[in-house]
Image (tube, rainbow, N blue to C red; front, top):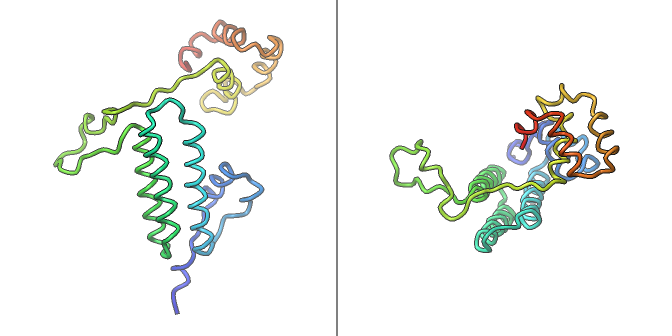
Length: 194
C-alpha cells in the first residue's frame, strides 16, 4: 500500500490566506490542513490560470512577442501540470514555471549557463529587450494615499483614516485637488511616496 503522504499535502494558513486573496474567502475559508493530491493540483492550475488572466488584463504597453511568450509560459505550465500524476513533479513544475514567469516579467530569463561567477549585477540586468516601467495616473496616486492607514510604516501616522477620506470628500473627489492638498500638507511624505 502506498504511503498516504505521497497522495496528500498539508496546506498552511498562509497559503489559505493567499488563495483567499486571489479567489475569495468564501471559497477558501477553512482550507488549511491536509488535502488530497488532486485538490492541490487543481489549485495550482487555478493559480496559473489567474496569472495568465492577470497578464492579459494588466500588461498593456509591451511588445506583442513578450506578451505572447508570457501567455505561452502560462499555457505550458497548465498543460504540463495537468498531465502530471506525481505531487513532487507538480511542485517542481510550479516552481519552475513561476520562476520563468517572474524573470520574464522583469524583461527576460537570465542566461548564466556558462558563467563561473554569477553574482555580478550585470548578469542580472534583464533589460536587453525591454524593462519594467511603472506609471501612475492621478486616480492611482489617490488610491495609494487613501490606503496609507493599511500600509506599514504609514499605518501609525494615519491610524485615523478619516482625515484623508473626509478631505477627499470635501474636495468632491477631485483627484488633482486632493493630491495638491496632500502634497502641501505632507510634502516630505509626498516625495517619499511619489
